[in-house]
Length: 354
Image (cartoon, rainbow, N blue to C red):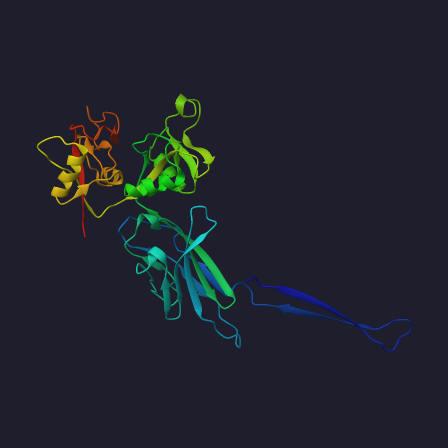
């Protein structure tokens, strides 16, 4: 609430006795000034905090109140946390607190609470972080007619990877792209996540959906089929397309997992169905694409054996480039989507920890 300064000029012309031809007018100036500055301010000590899937995090937020003038009364403090959606036009309710009353919403139920380290602490603790928790949050504190807000971004350690299904490239509308990422233990990536991946060296010449509905792709080595060899490196932007009719690939994002990713030692090569059954017999499930990328990027997993994954693709992770196993770069190598009846490959399995 901004302070206001009023200057009131009141002129009173009365039938006063005349002194010669001079009329005596009375003028009075009245100054009215409200409290200088807001009574309430909200501050986030950090604008960005970092964590990973499965971890816990505290989003910082504190409020400061100036002394309230006598007779103005006091008001109960209300704290509200919301999350901004990818287009920043809508907000999702996360948590509300007022007095002894507490309420959490949606997927945040039983996972969020106020830290309350001091009487002015409105920091939010989020436990058992999920991939969907990534994003920008707003802390709003309300006291009577006064309110103020602060913004905090939650960033997750993880990896962005391009994805397309067995049908081939440019076969996913936006909704199918979202589901494709979920099926591979990941979520559709944001622009910020793709940008950071590009800065870390991601180069991919096929356009893919992002969480805001845009279609983009990252280029670190400009070349003719990817915008031209005389262009500058960067994230190429195709703009926004029809989410139902337009079809592209997708960029997915995944983070740490709570489990064990491994290549199953087996006496023979396997068909796809045999690979699925082999993992089940070992007390696991056939691994997903997001899991092989997370193991490679976050754990440094390195194996020069091509293996089946849940989507029917065959890949292998190389952290130490060497001859015959990705000689020029560390990468998850993509063999393709072979005939599932071919008995040519091993299998990567994943066992979740409870």
